[in-house]
Length: 276
Image (cartoon, rainbow, N blue to C red; front, side, top):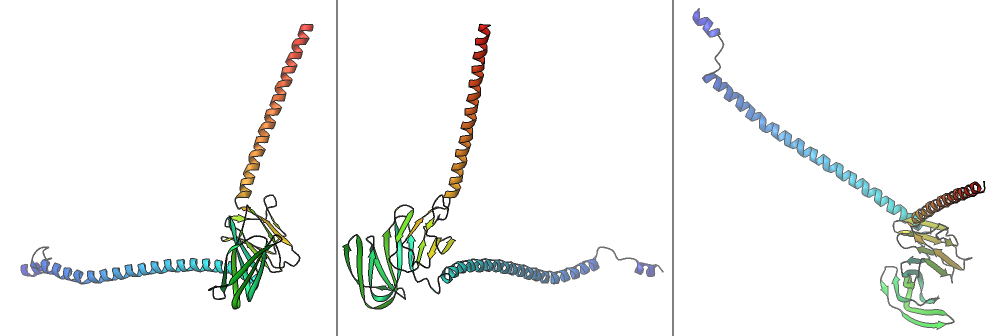
C-alpha cells in the first residue's frame, strides 16, 4: 500500500526527469523562435515596401499635378492664338528687349525706328542660318535688307533698346503682337500703369505677364506702362501713412485752435476785471 500511494504522489521539482522535460521544452522553443523571427523580418520588409510605395505614389501625384498645370498654361497660350503664335513677340528686359519675328521667305526688308544688333536667323529645326545684310539710314528710319540662300520657315531674333518702365511700339504691319513683361512686373492698375489699347488677351504666370493683340489692323502703336507686382501694396501703405499723418496734423490744428481760444478768453476776462 505504501508503494502504491508513493507511486501516485507528485513528482519532485528537481531531478533528472525535470531536467529532461526542460531540455525538451527548450528544444521546442528553439524550433519556434527562428520561425517567429523570420515572420517578423518579413513583416518589417513588407511594411517598408508599403511605405516606399506610398511615398512614390504621393510624389508621382504631385509631379503629375505640376506637369498638368504647366501644360495647361502652355496650351492656353498656344490655343489662344491658334496652333502656334504666328506674330511678333517682344520679351522685355531691364535694358533691352528680345524680338522674335516669324519668317517664311528667302529675304526680308526690315524697317525700324531704332538701330538693332545681334540679328540671328533660325530655321524650323532651330539651326542657325547665315545670311547677308545691308543697312541704311533714311529719314529717321533704320532700314535692313536681309537675304539668304533658300526659302526658310523659321524665326529672326534681334534686340532693341528699352528705357524705363514704359514700352512704346509703333506698328508697321498687321501681324499679331505679344509682349512679355519682365519677371516680377505686371500692368493693368490705372493709377500705376496700363496698356493702350487694351490687349485682346492677358496671361499672367510665374514666367511673366503676357499681353497679346491678335488684330492690329486698326492700331498704329502700342503703349504699355508696367510696374512691379508689389507696387499696389506699397502704394496702399504710402496712402495709409499719408492719411495717418493728415489725421495727426488735423488733430494738432484743432488742439492749437482750442488753446488760442482759451488764451484769448483768459485775456478778455483779465481786461474785463481791470475795467470793473
